[in-house]
Length: 277
Image 1 (cartoon, rainbow, N blue to C red):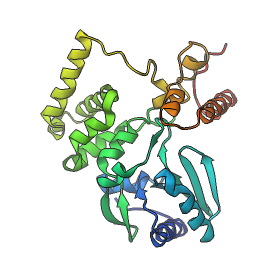
Image 2: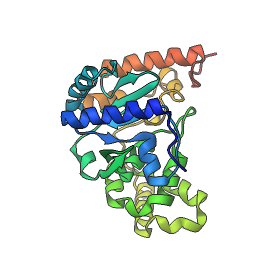
Image 3: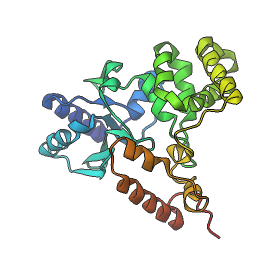
Image 4: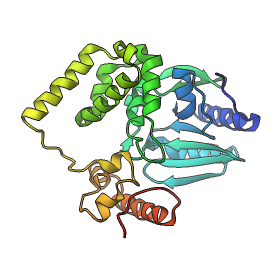
């Protein structure tokens, strides 16, 4: 399978990466191009995802604006965009649902590669699995992507780092590993036995003496729309507000985004659950 991009889109992407390289702004290629590099599966998502550290975002926007790209900040805590015709370059400074900022640790395990002929760094397969695990909604579910990466790039996965990345959310990792084992029953060996044993032991320990989670409800970490009913009618707290406080981000931004999400569901723009009758 080959990368199939419109020439004008490819030109916009390569020029953007060249601009950032010349400006000395570190970035990681993620999204469709990173997924392709690990699996050989091409899916044209109509954008180029670049991960940046938050402190580098404004410099990147300025460099791209000076190069003629219209730019905008979409969500202060994690997303800005640059445009060139129909091509979009997403400048991502954190994982949207989980509010995880991009920091030096993401760059430590990144892979050097030529992306569309431009020397770049690609986000590690370990971190790509980690962030995709939190994309589990009605509109988009990245479980198949995770299964494909374990199947095709298992030798590149840093399993201990993956366990560390999930931390207290280890049971979410276990969900995806069981998902993989169901999809590929004859390739279970791609997941080291010690990883499954570690997670199985944590499960047994939690059954015997349940852990008290810091986050009493985690639904909105996976899908902002399907779990709106839990927030608006069933009295669950939005964990993203707690995370915003913990990470010194804007709580009001989370509240405003949730209000906008409610209107998008009410209007039928996206599917979700409000529990209204």
